[in-house]
Amino acid sequence: GAVVSQHPSRVICKSGTSVKIECRSLDFQATTMFWYRQFPKQSLMLMATSNEGSKATYEQGVEKDKFLINHASLTLSTLTVTSAHPEDSSFYICSARQGRDEAFFGQGTRLTVV
Amino acid sequence: DAKTTQPTSMDCAEGRAANLPCNHSTISGNEYVYWYRQIHSQGPQYIIHGLKNNETNEMASLIITEDRKSSTLILPHATLRDTAVYYCIVRPWNTGNQFYFGTGTSLTVIP
Image (cartoon, rainbow over all chains, first blue to last red; front, top):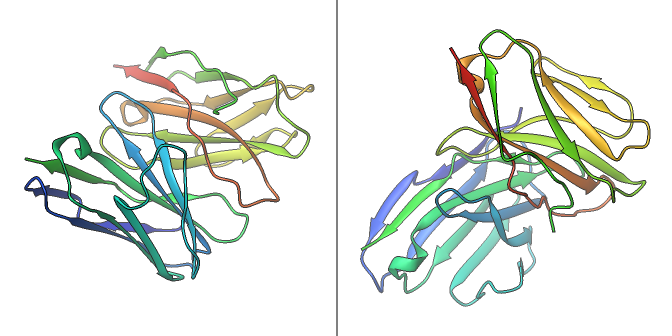
């Protein structure tokens, strides 16, 4: 299957700082990318959908000013958690899809805010 | 809105077939059934998908009932590495719709 790479795999940051997570499709052009968040022992919750070159569409209840998403190219999307707080600590996962095909997922980023 | 119902957990003996059921009684005509699995602390891994015919690949088989209201994912010879949470998702093929995850089935393969 296609490869989606996330970086970093884990990050620890201080409360109030911002953290950027990168998601890259390595061997295909991702027309659509998705960002998910997963708390311990829970399922994946979709945060937003982004199409290359356009603004992201956020799910209800997700603050777009706090979770900034940029999908500047067909192989890269970034999620920036601004002014992070301990409650933002979670497992963040990106997914990428080319056209109508099945989506492929990155390995996830474990964010810990202290 | 996950639109699917799966058992919370299942056990399977190593080497035996694991049969994971999924109910999707409100599935629409243009919606496919997708299966993903998530091994602990990793991103989900695509397994298989289908519309109405049974499908098989190197990982698993997907059996969809004739009325399409339920399906079963079959891992023919389960190994310890198949221990994971398995998610059944229905989604239209011909749109850019997102994948919404339900609670999934936690499969434990027992030695």
